[in-house]
Length: 542
Image (cartoon, rainbow, N blue to C red):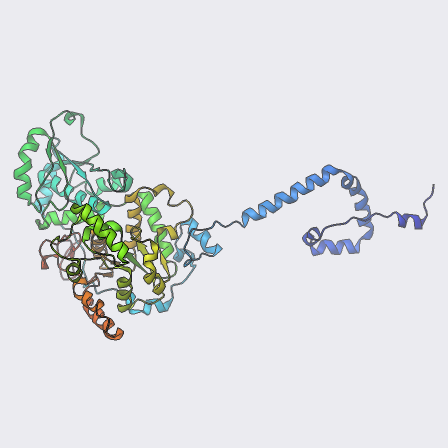
């Protein structure tokens, strides 16, 4: 039966399309549809069988869901575990995850105003630079030492990361004095942190061996010929012994037994050694003992994240519970915490490393106590640190938790540690390994524009020496003995206080200092003059 024109119009079909689909159609497609209504009608007739098929709609829904998931995936941004003080844009997060430096990608230019601030000005290095020129005699002795296969020195080093570094340095020197091969040092398990890391977990073993190839023969283990021999063991070595004492005490027995085992080398070797042995100390500390590649990689990556907006200050804060107990000082947080520290000290009197015949007040005035957060804040302000200063905080959680640091974070809100800077999962391989975490702090602190430790200690001393050897980068050494009386004078006007503190520290900002100006100074902390020469002296660098 024929269908009239009016009936065809009545039965004409229409397709309802969602606004999302319409918006996804390009403008050119819409124009084509408007210009060709007949083609549109023919196309709709061809699509009708598909539109009536339920499988088509299921497939269409699947495709749309898949496209949405793809869109969400490509726009996904991992949430970085940072404090409220730091924020990375999506572009910056991409850059951080690649590990590329901000200077390479030209992400953020350093503000010129930061460079003009006096606080960031570096000290005058007086032309000093590394020089490790060994004597002719030292070279002649090396040939004999390298040929020897009869004497082996084994050492067990204990303590924290930087205590271990100091003992390894002295172990190399003792091996040289005895003309013995050095077995890679054994790291004693730390009873406080339970860190079971071995030498190669922390340090670059190949670097250690290669750098010292012309000084001491380094072996990974004892040869089979010496495994069953009787080992000479020495548990206690007196403090500050000379090379002559080492030879007279150990050399005869070492030649007889073939193996000497030493423990507890901390501060056992004299700080005043012949020039060649002092240079060897520097060579070990500044060239041979590099951190393992995986530690260096992450440490340098976090350094770049701190640098991306300009210079930064690294603070080594010594405010942990054990620090207050060992120094005989009080944190001053509250009476409750003071009582806790006193009780801990009474129950474990051997922990007290400071002079036990002094009261807390006497220790404070003598400059033997760590600076607390408020004192660090006042010192930095007096030395001209602007409120915009970006601070990297190295060290353990302070007694009383992070709330203890509020005087610092209120005045200097750009305050970060490695947990703030790391992306998700980056610190996971280092967790529960205190030495590796300390090594990361060490790298970021060593690379900073300015460094300051709130109290002495092995890490502060090690970084001070490395920064001096790298060209006397600015390192603030708080003059606690002289400044603390002014901190305790509440009637002193702020302007006068700031001037006094600034004057007290004019010569404590990392300028070259002669090691020989005071007794028993460590050459790895004060490398001038044995390991660094100025332009007036003919020398060659290592």
